[in-house]
Image 1 (cartoon, helix red, strand yellow):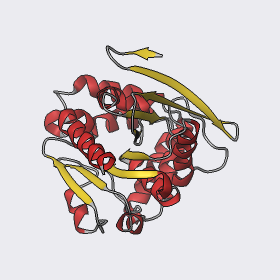
Image 2 (tube, helix red, strand yellow):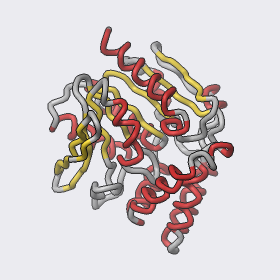
Image 3 (spheres, rainbow, N blue to C red):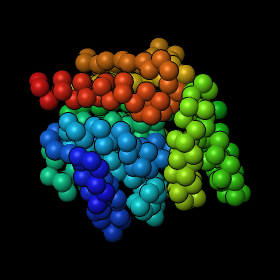
Length: 275
């Protein structure tokens, strides 16, 4: 157990068909699940989760193949990743939760919305999108798989840890970039490859988003290299939605503009649980 000044964080694990899934839980009240992205683990959320847990119960998990969670023997899918959230919520006796998915975690969150809508109170895509990869992006994923197999994971992790920040934030967040690199390097080669292939093969879930029956929050970074603002022109929004653009963020708004991101998600949760 990790003790902060006010909040205690319990590190826990469950087994689903003999597959270990690890997660952290902190705070009391209504539940929010934080789902990490590519080359990340639950550690990516540490500072953000601590602050968010002052107002609600926060769960941050390690997706299969990341952190302390084990990979399935068969190929991973976004639905299998989402199943991990389902089993954690069941274990904790939580009937409904707000799901916040960062980057790849947004793809997982949408798969959760598709398969477990009855457990969803609200959905937030954080630097993510509902779309499948196009052919160019699929080839980039395959190239990165090959580079990983050739022993270049260190280079991939180092480049990615910097690329997720806006250019003018790189010096300011140098320590966080180094921490991001450490977290990325902690993901096994098998975990990296599995997540790349899972992203490559994911289906388009724009229709899931359009038909969402719960509130939706979409957070974008104005300086994001990976999810440009033009994505909004292609998305079909549900009936109850809010779009927020972080003016000084790349792909890591929970760090680059932590206070603003925290306020957005806190306000989103208050609106949901007040209604």
